[in-house]
Image (cartoon, rainbow, N blue to C red):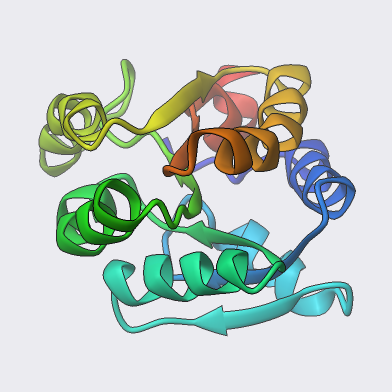
Length: 175
């Protein structure tokens, strides 16, 4: 693996987030999303906050949404398990949603054995939390999903996740 994310994918993410009126970007550092995290931090259109855990970031994004400001939480897909308490209380319990953007660790072609459980548990946990999610594998799908997320947040009053397949995270290795 080891290939960095393509610049065009990074640009697609930033442009789509701007178009979707996302202003706050919380993140827990992630190897596959690191280039996106750096690009967001360098762009004055975004307020970027490095959080200490996924639950904290989800809560900040939900609070931002409640206040009328678009927000996204960037995290590894294992963070769904870590943030279950906040996701259940806010989304299922209160109808206060958060938008998440995450790589699909454990996707077909992902090498490390530690990543496989992330893939095995991601969808069942998101389904248990009644989250709307989309796994995207091309830049046009990625743009479309990011733009659709705020509409779904407002309509469903529950969490939304856009999950980047390995093709988008692994750069030229999957081009």
